[in-house]
Image (tube, rainbow, N blue to C red; front, side, top):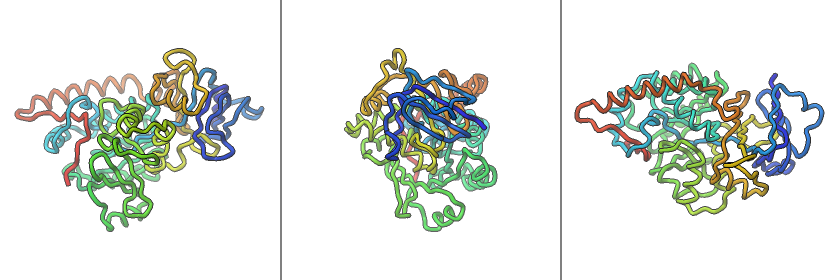
Length: 379
């Protein structure tokens, strides 16, 4: 039984429950066994004042954790360079082992968690290794092997079997799904439904459709598709120079022209449910604990904002440091330090990918893939 109490904080709940204010200027959050029990203004009542962990929120801004609705982890080590062709992409992926994907996932997750991401949908090769990394890192993931995307040589069907036999419905923070390039066939949709799997379809550039053809579609935007973003749609990192979700939100503002900062910020919260984490989202009683605490007691985060639109601006455009991240029963970040991904793992990850990149560049006649943009799968 783990009890966590946050006190004296400015809390952006983003709740639509009329009993929970969207913004609490000085209040508390009480968490028990990975779920929010209470969030309110003022001092916590006596029954909440003896937790195992007490976090002083004075000068801090507490917000819901955010989500990346589409993410590639294998390309994280090469994210600073240009867009690869499918041939270059397969040449690069052919070098990678399952252990390499574990390390690549850890590298990508480290940056995402430190930007306030608590859930992500990942579509990539060897997702059994990504599941193992997610379990170790504590982040909640939906893993969707890519079907019909030109990567069948990497055993997509086998990967689905591994996710179903080892992870989906067996480990709390891992779900399986499927992603197709192009339309989802009726046969695949029925098979996915029988297994309780969500389906995704990579449509035109920068767009993922959630549960296409079911009458309950949602859209996730990423990369060049961010220019088409509209309120109510989800967002994803995919592959970009920074795996910070707030950089994606900044780009939405620039490219879509949206000036409603609350809608833009809410897109990263609403994405949780789009990728299958319906119990995660706003900070309100009954929800899975999904908490990010930003340090606003001194520069660069100071001063703590006091209006709803100012809070959204501080999160999206400000530079306040992520001090604490809580996902369910896991504390992922404390005092700005990653707790679930150790320095030794990150060091091994970096060392391994130095060798991978050297091997890639030594392959005669092969230009290494460099995915600053979003590689388009084949049709």
